[in-house]
Length: 631
Image (cartoon, rainbow, N blue to C red; front, side):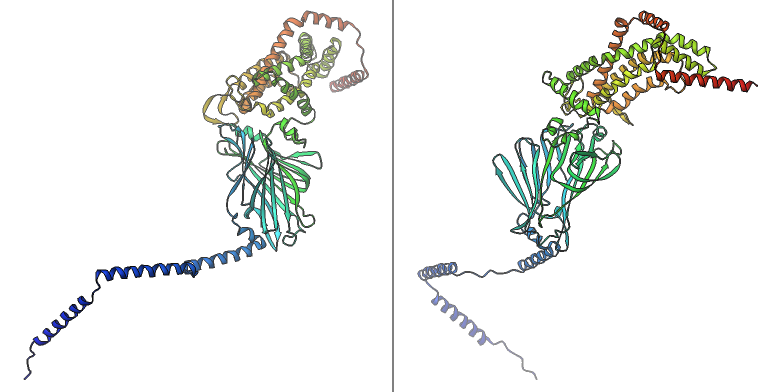
């Protein structure tokens, strides 16, 4: 039988008594308030003593896992840079190894140079605005690049990828910026910029120190200069027509790339390179000519409605040769207006950048029209009035030539009945008709060519002015009447669509010029049209309508100053012709002189006698052939 377990009350009482005894003992041993206060003072003293001891003994930093990973990563990065850049990894570990710009400026020009590449990343002309009133930036938003490519320690390096260390100082009023690409503290490639007050031209040097043991000096470094030209005018197609790449070579020769879609050329001994953008220009000049230079020009305006930001993309590549193991090139940068007076003041043949025309046309502009224009500008403030006054003076000077032209036309008009009679009489014998007509001209002292010669004499003047007005920087953003800019078109209305060759606007000066040309053509060719059209001669009626049409369509995007000149010129010409016709020439007197001259024996020179003999022999030969045909 299993014995039933009973509850042990004695054990329970024992546990309770022990617990009460422990509580009583803890109570008896608890510190008094005085003892607690004393203990707190002792702990405070011990804490202050420990803190003082910690200040005297340097503590060992606790290295965390994150910091250990960072140190390993930095070590790997440095090792990777050494593998990529060799000694120039030194530059990549300097505090200047970041995209940071330094500003270099004077009162007309502001330049920003980036540590990366050491080149100008922004060039602003302070005193000029674009057609839409924003500052003129020749360089901005990565449209330009300057890169020096060289071999170093079996690597090909490009300065555009490397970091330069900037140092900005002053020399009197000049500001100097030294950009050094360092291989060590005493070994570096340096770009040195120096800007002077009021100048668009700044000094630029490319030089090196202590690189002969690092860089392969047996192979020239190659400099690459690229610029994508920003649009700055209202009509991008008109601006693009005057945007081009030019250079000087072999002393004083100059050349340029054409307006093709993609053009390129090479030139030896180049002393300056110009990226001309109609009214503004970026130029690199050198005291030591580049041995050979390769140029490219890409036309970026294929469709004016779409390609509206850039005109052309220019590039130039040329070698920089090492001398005694180092580079030492003294150069200049020009960022400024395409103004003849400004460019000519540097005495570096930079005036050739302005397209004044070749040969005699350039001479007329340089030594006649430009001085006249400048002189008038000292007396007259309105450039529209200057164009009008200048045109009047030119027409007055050319009026004797125009008088001879109209006199020849008057003689031809008087002789027209007789010429028509000869045409009827010899309608079946063209050679005989031509022979008798020439005899009539000779007796009367008239010639159809007499009217052409004075017109040809005026062509150099007209063409020179055609080149002058689009290149006159002073006309830029100068208003006259309804035209707010004489260097751009004078818009009076907008069109809802874009018309090829014409544009999306209507300009008024070309319309007025076209009307004036039409009236002038009516006055000069109207008489010719009344005469029988000679075989092989141009259709004068077609020319009479074509000339005004060309003016109306193609000049709609041209500078309003040029259209103003053509309008005033033709109005004055019409006025001179009317004065000559009604107040100077008397057709009755001219007829009397012609009749008197016919009666006089006409002496022929050697050439005229020879021509007469040839025509007589030809006439006899033709008569003989006709006689044989009848047989």
